[in-house]
Length: 67
Image (cartoon, rainbow, N blue to C red; front, side, top):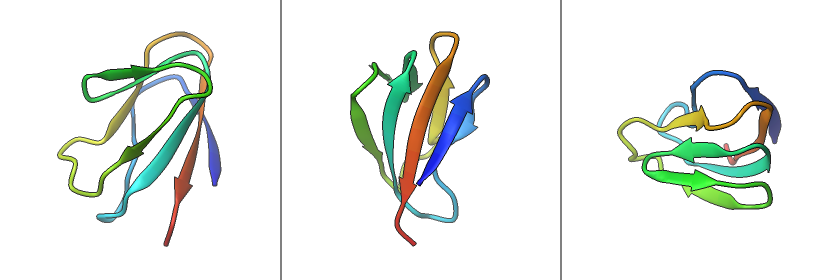
């Protein structure tokens, strides 16, 4: 589990692995969806561009990986 401060877009996944993202503060966009604090989502390993984009200032998120 990693806590990220998102001040610019960042890749959610690495090396064909999926990740679980939890929005802590602010709002985060992934694909066409926007998530608010307390919401979480799965980023599949097969996603073409798994970018997390901060949609408001002060956005933080938890990234959970299973390796």
